[in-house]
Image 1 (tube, protein in one colour):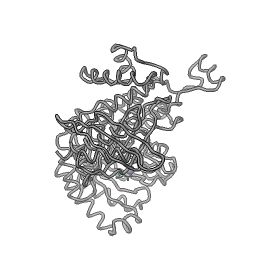
Image 2: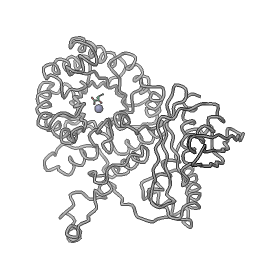
Image 3: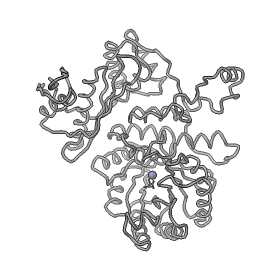
Image 4: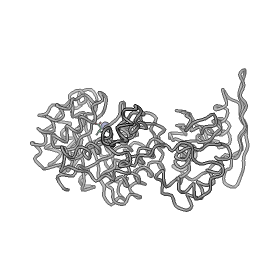
Length: 504
Ligand code: KIV
Ligand code: ZN
């Protein structure tokens, strides 16, 4: 690898998915993985294969579908995790196992209950075993930010000798300052002396993730572990879009360092992540926030009109940013206009997908007068799915009651049959979910329920996201409809279909 290339390691599908409420189903993970490939990231951490059957399947499917990208799976420094990771990524052309163990005194003593010597032994065993299964092994010293530098050198040396090609030194709890990260990477880079690539992985607990990652690069890191929109545990991970745009925009300082990112795919990637997860970046978020390129003040607007660079250091179009064009399609819009709109929003769909989407669009246009860009995005995210539909809602009627129980009557298609049933509940949502359980004969335990309006107006599309536990498996489902109750029913049935897909 060229020594000036900064390897972009995207962990949206692993660390990003650990963000509360950011769960994705297998189909969504595959779609995002393919978008990340288009974006030009080098390595994609596709999940933690040993975590569950669903995680294994998602990593495995991504490994099958990816063409050029390196597909990586995370594994604790234990054989069973490493074996699961190796099996899951096996179909990929380029693959990596990322194994880790904590190295800070607090983690070793209280979490692992291991002595430093035992931790080194585990690291050596893990890396050697991973190396016997794949060529490309990354080793992480979890909580490196709070680890003793002498111990870090010892364990890193052992991991490199056991075969690790990449050494990741994360600031797991987001505690460090940029000057401290710079010193750590400089010292470790001199110590490693080109025997492995050093990687930066910084959490944002003090809002320093991006600054720390840039300091790591200055100290010698040549891989950055990042997520789209800065998604991730607690306050999140370092945002991919910010790091790659700093390197590009400030090439006067960082050249000849560069990344292989296709910058115009940044905004479409950001939109895809927020529509899949229902987590919007804050409006003033750098690069991808909806106000990132908006000029409100008259003085600024005047300046930009006279010479854009008076107030703009990045052109919105450089990152593929598209401002919502306001009111767009409606009942009378034809197929060509719809296709054009999809293209404009950055979606490449095949003929079958276009046909299916156009039918959904027409259905929506019958119910909703004004259709906005966000409605179209939600429609695409919701409809392009290869999950087999074991159950499909045909009709639903609900009754709400301010005293006593609410009720739901539902008809569902299952194979060639249509089945109807009814239930009462504590509120309409409860009644609907109980009625669906009665029809399927599979009882779900609702773990999470979120609802939001996708765009504007009283007739806005309601997007419902649910997390449901069926037997010993938790799956997610999304529903989209102008009717919130129907959207809830669709989300619940979606989660049920995901469960049946995974257990069939
Ligand atoms: O933050 C962290 O330390 C991690 C490791 C598993 C790499 O995510
Ligand atoms: Zn992390």
